[in-house]
Image (cartoon, rainbow, N blue to C red; front, side, top):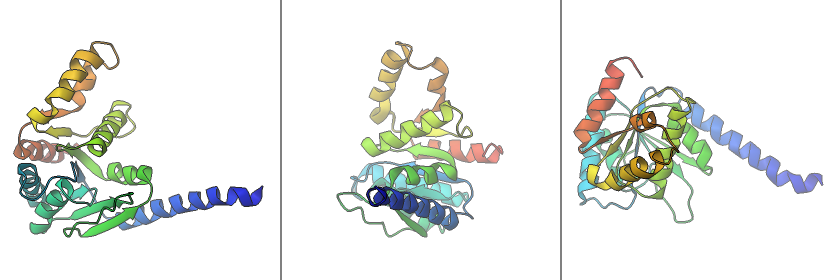
Length: 213
């Protein structure tokens, strides 16, 4: 019986190792903004260029930029921060389809477990920005909303960039989720919908300047 349980015991140690390594590597990081978005946008896409601009705006104010460390929106946000000599952090994840770390990272951490990676995203965050994205972006977005809603973390801005992209989701939340009583009206105030990265950056920067971070 002892031998049969050993693989699970080793898994716990591996999880602990990821936690300790992540905490130690990021111990000096203060007040990062976590940016999420699709890995599938190529460099010529408008969303990619907007994310580069977002990284530039945040880094120019001394705000560290943290992403999932991969391509697309993640690469673009890191790239913008990196070119401004700002702190650029990537928290990569092992996937069945290989996600290669992008070339614009000051700190690159690799994780096997999603929940350890999510903990690191939240631990150092003073704000979340969600660019257009797929399942992964939705997962991180609702994770952040749930943590703030349940007061498991200190309240911080959660900003959705791209009114046209997010309009259908927001309409569903208002007209179905809220209408059926599955959330309260105040829960809709936990996020802000904007059209430009300039608006998103200003919300985060104002939050920091006001000492709310």
